[in-house]
Length: 191
Image (cartoon, rainbow, N blue to C red; front, side, top):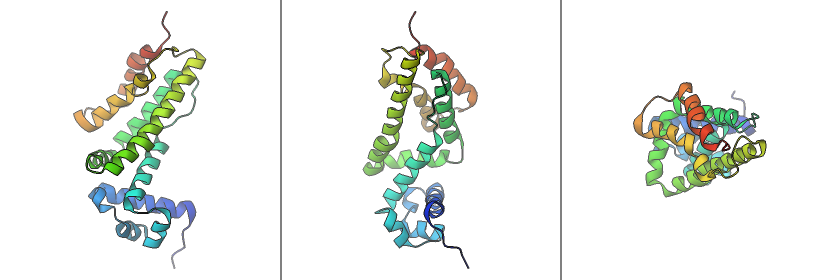
């Protein structure tokens, strides 16, 4: 007899099923019926949590990306950026990489998905990066007049470009080079 799952255990099973379906069949494969079957639960359980499969998918993707990217204060701008970019690099080189490419492609055709990603994922990351830069200003390792709108996206944009466009490697050497050769000099207080 199967044990009845509740709370976080059930939620994790549902989200894992949605991600598996997304990876194997793309966004159109993530239906409430398919997720319920894969998670061994009922559609009613899903509908109590999400109004439709698109909401389930958006919520799952945003949660996955937010959890993968650290935001702790390491004590220095350099340390903070190494942690953040290493989080992105792990996400972009892990088993989710192909799925992320598929999600970005799907967002071109799905306005609601595109809006959710822009607001809930990218918007969230922009706010966190702005906070990270402000911490650096307070510590004195980021200049007060740094153009935040550029600095908060500079390193991540290289990783996204490699994931989506060039296919060039994303590794720790790249992360360290981006931080030490681009980001730290860009934000450093001027002599």
